[in-house]
Length: 409
Figure 1 (cartoon, rainbow, N blue to C red):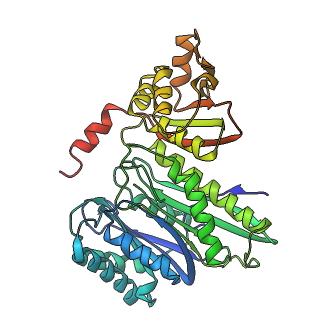
Figure 2 (figure 1 turned 60 degrees about the vertical axis):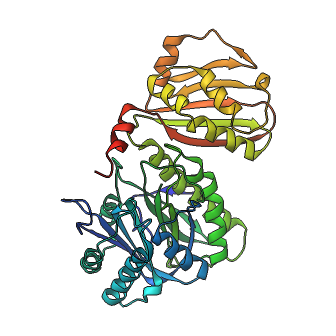
Figure 3 (figure 1 turned 30 degrees about the vertical axis):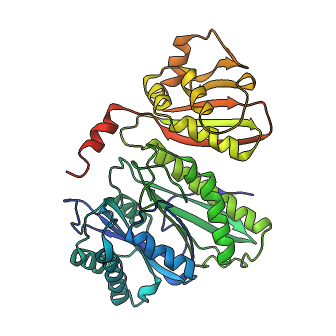
């Protein structure tokens, strides 16, 4: 199974184009709308927030995906979330889709929409429509157009996030590319984040959805920045079958290869999102090995990266292992403290600090040196089974509060 990282993002797969524009929805002097488009109709799979308060765009897209309708386009705006906006918010979705129908001659029912930004503000529909008109004339399949689209959907993100891979299915080269945004309100539960992936693979819709649901659970559902699950969490994968491969109609070698490639793309994007948490200075990874069950491993890993005390310790380079054990203890997973080993690890080295219920007399200076790296892993060996899981988060810094204290104003 040869899966290669390649240049690009949402335009890497054959037949996909992208564009962006400065619509002036909330931000000034920067692009704030993006569009992904395929002339060929696409199978679509997706997962969405389980927050009871759902943005109008989430309701619109969830209905499209569950209907099984084929899609041509996704239109995304940043700055205003279109959440808690009533019927007027849903009308903004409809008008946006109709603008795409008028400009690109595809059915409005084949257009998904997504929004990110401030909750409780109405979208300026006239600016959305004008933005669609502008982007329709600028659609391009170039890598640059995909990159620019990934930048246009940013809110408090400090860097854009995109990636792509290629692999072979029955002698045909297949590509999966994608982009995502997210920096704060990150604690996905579906799947505060938006992620849009494209592939030229020919694959049955049911298998596409199966792969998405399983991979999202191992990647985007294993990240946390601040414990807040957004009203707008959206993950969508569009497949236009332009690679020319024999259609993947059942589980087997071709499906497994596709799923592994999808995992690589999603894992890369999820890690980038966690590392770019609001105010963050480093990626914080918790890896649990030899757990009794997969559920226990996931629960423990997410509890460790989600603990504010753990996150603060990572920021301060403080090897206070008690904070991590404490988070494990209230996670709900069943385990024996006497079985646990705990290590700190980074590019600078690896240090054991807790051994089967006993604290070790470790070198504090060595611990600080390891924890100063821009990616730090807490490795936890449960010694109770064979299952493992990894979760990703970031450190908790002074800047997180500064960013969120005046986000709306």
